[in-house]
Amino acid sequence: MTAVAQPSLYERLGGEEGIARVVDTFYDMVLADPRVAHFFANTDMAKQRRHQTLFLTFATGGPNKYTGRGMREAHRGLGIRDEHFDAIVELLGRALRQHGVTEADIQAVAARLEAMRPEIVE
Image (tube, rainbow, N blue to C red; front, side, top):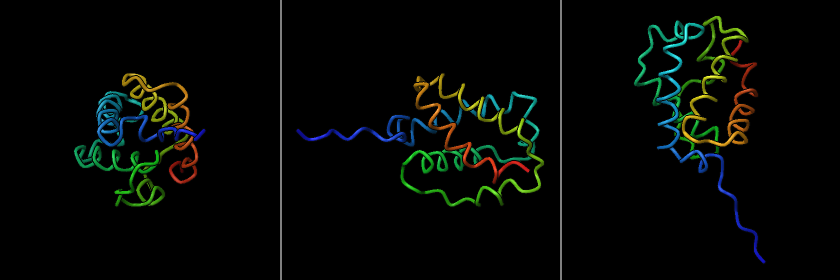
């Protein structure tokens, strides 16, 4: 009996299209949340949404098309504290739930983000 390969996290999230839908919902929430909206006041949100989609595609096991700056460089000098990072993870979890993602997969995404905390939080 041959083992059936389980779909990757990227595939379970709906691939790049599914991730793009989650990212749109996520940034709608972010821009409405006073804890973190100010970080995006002068941001080209269309570009930000594209970069985030490509980043999450790569981070969840999809093809690496991300060409943005590294995490440390992209977030240097922004004054991001643990409470901001936690708010972003919370909002992403909410967006994923709205798109029917399982709690196990939400926790898997959160764990991948948590590993980046030292590069993002000052």
